[in-house]
Length: 320
Ligand SMILES: [Zn+2]
Ligand SMILES: [Zn+2]
Image (tube, rainbow, N blue to C red):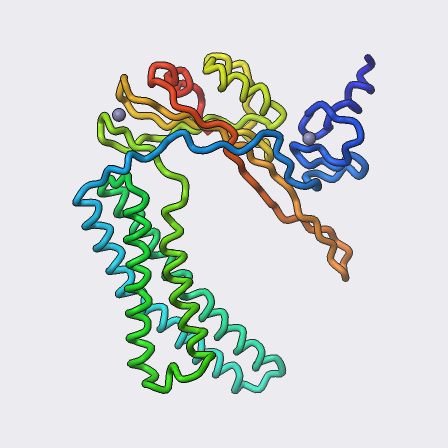
């Protein structure tokens, strides 16, 4: 086989062997006909897997008290703040509207509605963040506790918002369907966003030394190695990973990480995530200039527990 044939049989971007009849490289999205990078759809080669780590469900009194304290404080302070942001936005909107510029009315409406949409969601986000922080400080390994406390704190946030809203505007403030709709949105956004935070990736905890594990992220590997990396991981033959060249600038890539602690008889966790990088291309109608926007999707393709002795070689390998 000549060198020329070799290059047409693989993706020029990521060097994955090219399948016949394919318009795009399934791993890096290269469009063979046009040479556009990252143009194809996200097409993962391997199925998503569950996290091998499962929280023990144990918690501490300290964690519960801290979560309640952080969550309630965030709700009590955040509710009035969210109202303040909405009131200020309405004032700015009214001021712009009175300026008489042609699109002023529309701009005023966008600012006012935007504040109503965003402020309650930010309130929920801050509650979720603080309850999560309290769970970490207090060493709670019970995601249900966290979700329930965040949800109640979201209700506290809504309650304090409602109190200030009523105090500022009086009984006329909820006599129309539109008012109820706005308040309903505040309730749903604050509570749902607050409670959703617990569903984020769970940090493993070592029940032996009663500490959160630390994460060691290996230097990224190019995506064309995905299948071979999975074979090595499945065999638990981590020494072999040293023979895989790292590529710190690869956009579409595989990332292996190890959750570990110092305990000799603890189980540690090895994961691999595949990141597929794509561009969203758009052509400006006036200048005909093509712009590209990064779109990244990640999938966990490997997750397994190993004894600490076995992952030691991984911890010695260079990190990202
Ligand atoms: Zn490719
Ligand atoms: Zn430990």
